Length: 105
Image (cartoon, rainbow, N blue to C red; front, side):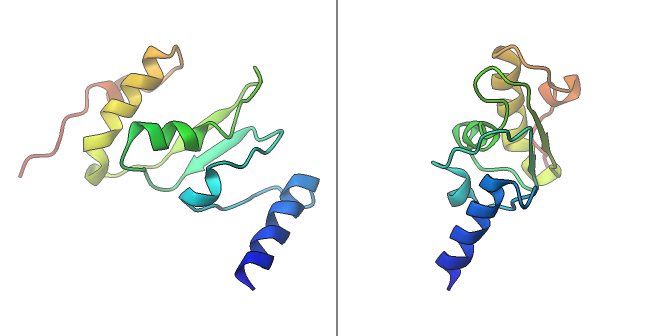
């Protein structure tokens, strides 16, 4: 039943009858959806590569897109490397994310 529900949700998203698709990391990889203009990350992956795959769902083929990422102090180890790569690629990132340091206790 889960696969049928998943396939149904994907089909409805592709045809435009639903506008929001909430995905796991696995669903976010390997599927190409046209016209996605925003990706919202509720949590961060543990690597820069995984993050790039996630936000790569938006702004394809020269189109504009936006990625919004929520993070907490537990994500400090990965947020700065992600921000650095995004910035080096020429995309805007909040300046404070480039200065973040690991939490010390």
